[in-house]
Image 1 (cartoon, rainbow, N blue to C red):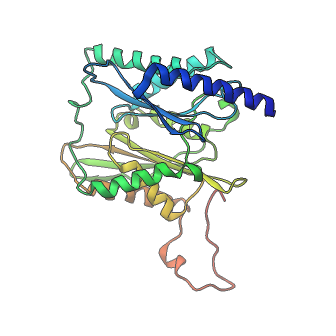
Image 2: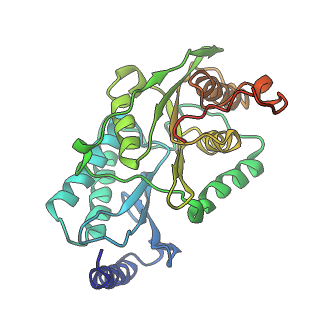
Image 3: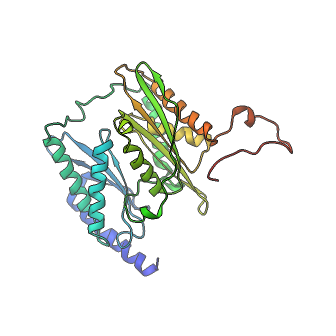
Length: 319
């Protein structure tokens, strides 16, 4: 885009952030001013909040003129129908206010959504809704993994990009489903799709949530890695969906395996019996098996063969 337009956008962003900081004070947080990354904790009420959600945003150079903020909604209870309903509401705001600064409208829409949740007769506050009461023993290790994931901003970590604009130009990637693993009445199943854009990530999630069984899962943990050839960096992100640290562990596995241009979702249906650390083993095993099945990683015996003229080349999709 033209330098003049980019400067105009930057000034609008600065003005908007100053206004939001003044309005929300300590609720508003600057994560990385140079990279234009911000977040805000939003609650249904100030005095005794029962519903809380964190909105994280990246403001691209094209915002607000021609592009929306890149964002992520973080709340352990936000899944399935609730996530889709809130995402659709934010999308409507963007479409109705093209070219305008919309962060204030987004924050207040989310607050309105939380108020409605708190007033709903069917809703139960997140602290009382313990779908699984499993707690990590090795929380210190999990903290390190989670923060390593977050600090990868400079190597291409990205948040979700929500807009229907241009979706019709994207093709829904084929989605593969792995074999379920059942342990003490909990069932785990992995789903895989090749992805090369953030829009495709959203399309895959939307498609999976159209399946009633998957939408009803206790947790749908996911991670993706997209390699950008021009910048030689990765777009990568993950989501626990309430299964603390599971998303970070899944992404860490994908980094170790050096897979690219792929998304893995692992559904867990909780059976009422606590599995402890075994649940992480099952989640990663499901992911590893489906990546292996679809040739994103090579077998260990192939990897250890000596190099030679007839050595089989490593087969990685999306390179």
